[in-house]
Image (tube, rainbow, N blue to C red; front, side, top):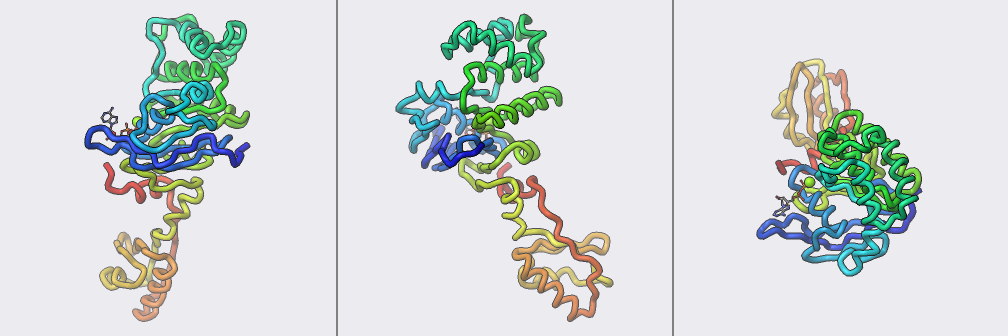
Length: 311
Ligand SMILES: Nc1ncnc2c1ncn2[C@@H]1O[C@H](COP(=O)(O)OP(=O)(O)O)[C@@H](O)[C@H]1O
Ligand SMILES: [Mg+2]
């Protein structure tokens, strides 16, 4: 259940590395019970943001509250409430999965009996129970990531941070992790994850923030983000005879026209104006419109249009 209360509250946060502004005055609220996706291309500032939110590095300016605690001034209570799955798996390779879990239990002060229960529960759910006594060295990348998630969940945190949790993983590991995240969220856990995978963000997240060169370019539901660029949508038109593309592209509301196989692909600046222009032009040219489509943009296209020119 999503409530109005903020799980994460970010105000005017900036982080510089020498002359690079990795995160540039971002402000954002994540609500309790929400799965929030932080989506952006490589180098956009996702990891830097997560590292600030989880108290690993300090912002140069601005403030961050997690579950009501200031992460800089009051890091201990803030960190007790969070589970963190960093960009690279952080388990000890020389220890077994189970030994790593016991270390995580010590770190969070989970009593032994409860820790044993949690180890059994999470390793079973994430498909690692049969391998718990094997050294992590021999685990696949997907198994290491599942173990990292199990460790992050040991103390049953109300908020979970994950940095590209399924990036480069096999299908089975991805499925187990996504299913786990959905189940946790249904039980009330707030989830903040970064990804550069649109489909994943679309399927999993209640809201998505798009980060571009350290700045937030958009924050909305996946559905709304799609609608946002319907205004700069593409129109596909077929006429009963050839029409001059130069004349079409000069019409009000139209940004660009290309022709392929007798169909005209029109990029509209404003869809209503563009359609009126097309209809008026067809009439003036005594051309009949045989077909007119406005294909809905995919989240991919939304993302590309918002982050165009970044990579
Ligand atoms: N420790 C660091 N030292 C110097 N530059 C860094 C450091 N960490 C990140 N950066 C730079 O900050 C920018 C954002 O990086 P990052 O947050 O890792 O992006 P993302 O996770 O979205 O790929 C990049 O230009 C990156 O090179
Ligand atoms: Mg990153």
